[in-house]
Image 1 (spheres, helix red, strand yellow):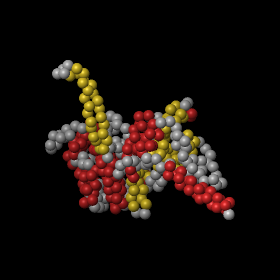
Image 2 (cartoon, one colour; image 1 turned 180 degrees about the horizontal axis):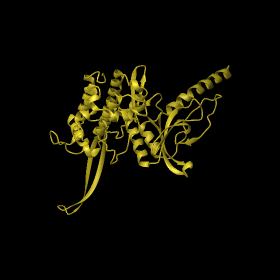
Image 3 (cartoon, helix red, strand yellow; image 1 turned 30 degrees about the vertical axis):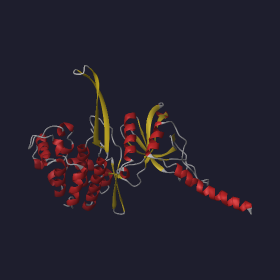
Image 4 (tube, one colour; image 1 turned 180 degrees about the vertical axis):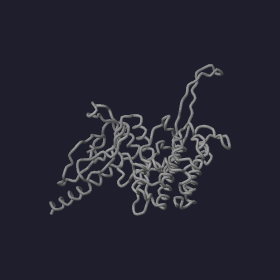
Length: 372
């Protein structure tokens, strides 16, 4: 009678072991940060001992897993994104693996996503699973920087989402849902704050010695590269879902402030009202004559960006206000927005741009803005 009992105990232990191992593999954000800053750790992918087909092909050794590349899903100036599995078996998790050449950009995005993971904005950004340096043999052993994140199954970039409706355009009710969700997610992101501390040394004539001045600044967390390919959209059983990818580090061309993100959101509102395929929808947005947009969209972008700014943009473009194309506004850079308004009160033009929280309340009180 002892042997059968022992066999049952062994069987129960074998069944419980994967559950224990899975619990052990759930790491907190603090533990992830600690692991990313240290050397390689033991791979954590677990497999059932069953006969299954092993995936073959190119792979990358990470800190936490070996990643088997399935296909390239995107590329930019310095970055490539791949769909990968975090192990050799078909039942392993599908992830997004992003490879870049810029260490500063890699470190910024890693720290951004880890900070977001501990905030109310966490559901709207991909979770980070691994971060490591990697030598690319195809580039002569050049050092590359890798992030492994959630793969956003079923999501499309906003440009492709709008373009998928072709000449019919996005249905007005759906367009309003998508814009409202983008604005809501933006408001949640901007509610997360970042505190930076700067130290400056100077010589005090009064004290006749060198002194140190420390300045602490708290600002909203901003994306800075909020264009139509970094906003991901999915409609699941009538429910609109929005995710945000690829936050950008601070630079002269891409400053971190609320108004830059909200300027992009105004572009998204106009794009959602346009018709065209994925390759032409951006041009359709830029070429759209503002006075020919749906009345509700006109009112939205005037409220969001400030009506006086449209008047000044028309003057700069050398056209009448009623002839102004949205490209005449959407192509304006910091030189325009950071200067003082010449119409009305003498304030910096960017101060007319409303916050995400304000515009979310506006949308909750103004329905059917995409109706023609």
